[in-house]
Length: 302
Image 1 (tube, rainbow, N blue to C red):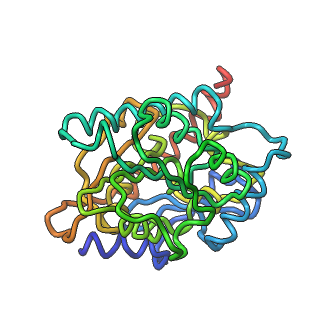
Image 2: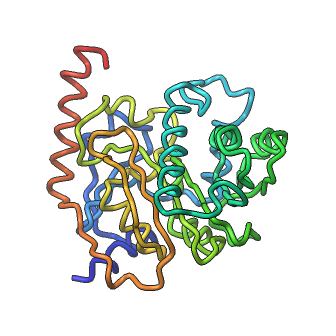
Image 3: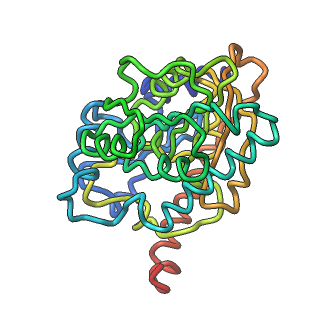
């Protein structure tokens, strides 16, 4: 079986072989569904919204100053701390690699920069870096621009003009919220210089120790397509390889809330070994999580 071919089918939304996780319906919005793709074991929503619809939904329902549902903001201490963790990991990696641009001239662009918190942290810790941002929300773009940072106010994956010759691109807690993350990564790859690196971070949730209730993972209010992917390490690695990247470093995602991968551009995928998550194992994992969410997590209100 061609593993790369099967993953490409999933990430191009061309896979028709899947299992619906109907026991998760009680956690999600009424018209939504969560499914496991066969044979890759990748977890996703129905993937029916367009990328433009998702961008519009996020801009109107998450990144507006008049939105009153404040369950999440990148300015919250827990969210800010994980962004700081990414920044420190990046700096350590650049030091180990002996990157000559670390202390001067390094060009970093944060994709889907949101509220600009990562940019703010990078500007404070490494004021000598040249920073840029790409953000789909006009309101958030204006806030980042007010920090003196060059901003492109546009969505990702639409083939629009982009930054060029970037040393470091970051995309943090965004790929899981994109209908077509493969297009986004290919677009970012084209913006990197030959020696450039990509830093990806997502929440570490699948096939790792359970960290919270499914009531806190899913939403009954928002359609599941606005957070359509739930990556394991294997599936996130596969996504990057499909987009033309080679993984050069990753963190201890099993015992961390963060799953972080650093990758470089690659012209060949043949030397990179990819594996599926066993769909039966993923199904059992989610079924056990459902049980814990209705018993242990519920009893201790966590």
